[in-house]
Image (tube, rainbow, N blue to C red; front, side):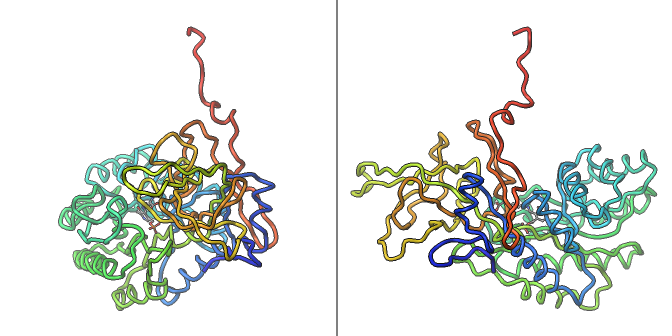
Length: 426
Ligand code: LLP
């Protein structure tokens, strides 16, 4: 469910015509819907209402301060993976005691920042990291609350680049190694084991991998409790629930919650969840303008020429199609019903053949100047944007009812070179 809907052939973001934002703010532009973000958060949170739980929104999905503030107001915590994300989460008003810190490469400086801020727990991913955390805690004179991220070796059946819970992935520790790490931590007054953690991948469209991972985690949790780990309270299942981009049929949050709750019955623990995509993905679109349309002559491969719709957004703005062969629905902002479709590649201005938003896509015929909407771009969209080809990054807009706010200005040329210096000696 989202609030990007056509009315009389014209795409609206809540009560605001998308074309109006494009005219006033320019393109490419990311547009987020506040009502959709709130709704997604509430549906997810309420699905777990009868269980002690904490929803830690995964900041990496969309880390705009206004988005974080909106979610903070809803009561969200945060799952962070860097000092930068900690900075953003705190700046947006997310309480530190609702922040969990994941990631395989935390530096001691980042640990210091997070420990000083008083976060809920560190999700530790290696033995070396646990040692480092202990050193930092000793230095600050403040014991560090932590979970070990277990790699449950469960196949999430998703794209290989976004699967994380297999032995061959760099994430977490095997259960036995994790168990021994907890025992070792017991001897250390500066390490406080408060939970167990896992995250098996992203854009999962089946429930069984979650259930399997949860069973493993639960086994370890109970074993540790029996060993006398009395401070253990949190069972963090990570994020990963998939969304509809095209034809997928991911389970709705209620079904996901039901499956988890069945496993959780009788467990004396607080469930921690780290959803990202399911909150932000369909709460955002990317709007781009058609610059040119061209058809190359037929080649050896096909008797038809290939048509390219060249738009002003490229792989630097939205890299998902290039990186994961991801499908994003693309439609004109103004529908032209009844017109026969064309088959085209929607490509950006970047000097790479991999710079495409869609390939061999059926579209209504489009002309230069038309606006196109790329759907489901609210998660892993702007956050993965770069300045490649010296392209200033797009503006971000948040719509709330009849109003809209530019929540990140479009970058300009000066922004591109702000941190650079030409040495005088040159
Ligand atoms: N927790 C941890 C430890 C994670 O690594 C992630 C995502 C999440 C939570 C949130 O997962 P979600 O609920 O959003 O699926 N750039 C890729 C996705 C990478 C996900 C990385 N980790 C994409 O565009 O598909």
